[in-house]
Image 1 (tube, helix red, strand yellow):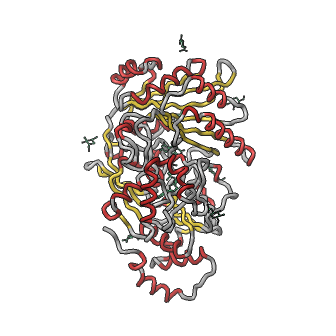
Image 2 (cartoon, rainbow, N blue to C red):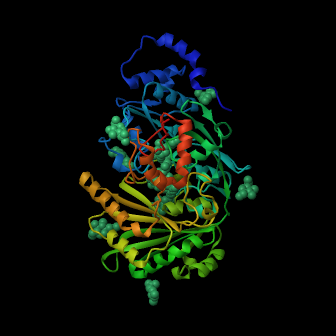
Length: 536
Ligand SMILES: Cc1cc2nc3c(=O)[nH]c(=O)nc-3n(C[C@H](O)[C@H](O)[C@H](O)COP(=O)(O)OP(=O)(O)OC[C@H]3O[C@@H](n4cnc5c(N)ncnc54)[C@H](O)[C@@H]3O)c2cc1C
Ligand SMILES: *[C@@H]1O[C@H](CO)[C@@H](O)[C@H](O)[C@H]1NC(C)=O
Ligand SMILES: *[C@@H]1O[C@H](CO)[C@@H](O)[C@H](O)[C@H]1NC(C)=O
Ligand SMILES: *[C@@H]1O[C@H](CO)[C@@H](O)[C@H](O)[C@H]1NC(C)=O
Ligand SMILES: *[C@@H]1O[C@H](CO)[C@@H](O)[C@H](O)[C@H]1NC(C)=O
Ligand SMILES: *[C@@H]1O[C@H](CO)[C@@H](O)[C@H](O)[C@H]1NC(C)=O
Ligand SMILES: *[C@@H]1O[C@H](CO)[C@@H](O)[C@H](O)[C@H]1NC(C)=O
Ligand SMILES: *[C@@H]1O[C@H](CO)[C@@H](O)[C@H](O)[C@H]1NC(C)=O
């Protein structure tokens, strides 16, 4: 169902409007952009309500609303000349047409969780943000076990709407409910059911994409190569995803959760060491993730490391306990540690909402944290020795660092069965787990920022001998501008981009470059780490 390009279909309307508005000739590119947008729609008052410029009273609040990292919540970064919040797919088509026409750079934002703020901060100037927050319809077809979800919907909204229809259907995506499905699925997307069902992007069966020519494409009209590329090749690269069609997965009416916390004094080092060999080999229904933090120990009156073994089991406690006894007895899990609940309640539990919270909290879009943070990622293929863990603890205990944290996500199960080329996300069999390195801080100013960022870079350097090599793999959804040369002006060469490209996509990088070269040869959709086209 490829549609005629916007260019030709709207010409008659444009022509009429041009006649009536011809007295308006404006010098500034963004004013021309606004003019161009309003030319496209008969009801230009309705359109004007969806547009924010720096002089609009709510410009700052609309800009900040989906900022998820306080590090980029400042006026020192360049700001967009226009924020446009379309309510219709045709508005997105017009935004692409008009920004191309006026030579404006475009950034697409769904949930705003990009680790480096790339959906709303740009050094390619001037730029426009197309914020999809109003395109967030979730239509669940429980009978066929599918759902069409618009890009601006949050994961929380998706989970809530699925559970509302059927308590034994679910979708295997990320943990954090405010994440936007637009960016998330564009980079893969994983959560507590990855070992059973793979990534979010592994469970996408169709999509609606607007390409650089303003055409609305679905899977059939875009072709399998482009459909392959958009499921994990990174956002803001091939076009604007307006909606995904998801394949829903079955979950039992009762699942079991537990969190077992252990400090260094409670043998955390030995348990974490053991976890490395165990977690990727557990039954697919069982995911035990590991969250590592620094805490003040109440007994000893000093700081220590807390390892929290946080788990989701797709079944009841009576089946879980013998599995744990067989595969990870060292953890000493007992029935009292376990709580049985519905899958949707387990979503709340894993985020950390109080046990009496209503599922309605999943519908809220306001950020759940307003701290500064910097993140990085690593993959681990061989267990680290205990001495390596002790080096991590030492760094975590450095006093001038506010909140260091690591999340270790176990691989194996379904992830071992999916081919490395099935979608652009290449990190499959052979990986024991993924590390997410994080540091959070509240102190304002450059000095604090530099101190924390340099700390996490040192931790990353320290881990070099223990993690994946050639390439040192990374997860594109944990965007990290430290790894290689970035594409600030959109002129990064293939060779420069391949430094981060191979880390994120391994051998799939070349295929992504070839799709990009075919569908967006002028590199209209781009950011610092988007796939570059080959210049002909
Ligand atoms: C607090 C927090 C928790 C997280 N937890 C998880 C987790 O559990 N699992 C996991 O896998 N990841 C997790 N992430 C990472 C998250 O998946 C990525 O940051 C993801 O890209 C966010 O998507 P978004 O739409 O919210 O972000 P955005 O910042 O809006 O978008 C991210 C990128 O995609 C582009 N983009 C956005 N929408 C579209 C679209 N419709 N079409 C084309 N391009 C688009 C943007 O321009 C940007 O480059 C987490 C991030 C944060 C901040
Ligand atoms: C939304 O856009 C579609 C074309 O993409 C159009 O057919 C429809 O009329 C529009 N709806 C509204 C309410 O503008
Ligand atoms: C709910 O989904 C399950 C699959 O998990 C299916 O077997 C069942 O029939 C569905 N129930 C309803 C009421 O749709
Ligand atoms: C720690 O491990 C030792 C043996 O390795 C054991 O004797 C001790 O009870 C454990 N301590 C805790 C708190 O589990
Ligand atoms: C731990 O103790 C330090 C110093 O007393 C204090 O500043 C910090 O807030 C405490 N942290 C927590 C999580 O209680
Ligand atoms: C949950 O319980 C706490 C006290 O334990 C109470 O303060 C809070 O209001 C309750 N929340 C809801 C949604 O019931
Ligand atoms: C961004 O700043 C605004 C205004 O100061 C604040 O309300 C909001 O919580 C901040 N957002 C984040 C993610 O820190
Ligand atoms: C890209 O363009 C910018 C601005 O024109 C320039 O400063 C930079 O050196 C260029 N980078 C490369 C790799 O050509």
